[in-house]
Image 1 (cartoon, one colour):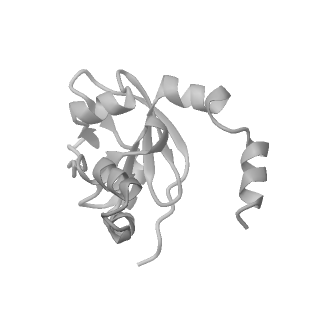
Image 2 (tube, helix red, strand yellow):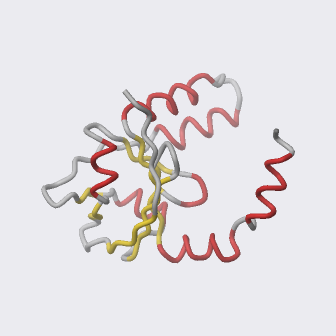
Length: 146
């Protein structure tokens, strides 16, 4: 199977029941049995089955005797859910996930290569405006990793 690449940015409104529409492009790529969990920087992450297994296996490869490993394992694995889209392509996000990501009404859904992220619009805007590194700072820091 060819590797999936999730790209793009979409704006949606979450309904009062906590349901949000996944873009058709992402629904097709995610297939059945995708996973939603907490993500970095206050968003939710959605993984297709293949990428979820890769992510989960990486987490479980860390020794449980390491406090940082336990923190990551608990954070990402304890609250994972497998929502099923309805006929309109909406998924129900749990109250715990909505609270974690600060989701109330407006959401931004983005593709990030091997997974999809759901952000509260305000959080996404703040992250892009002043909450993260500038593109130049990020590129500079990445150069040190290569």
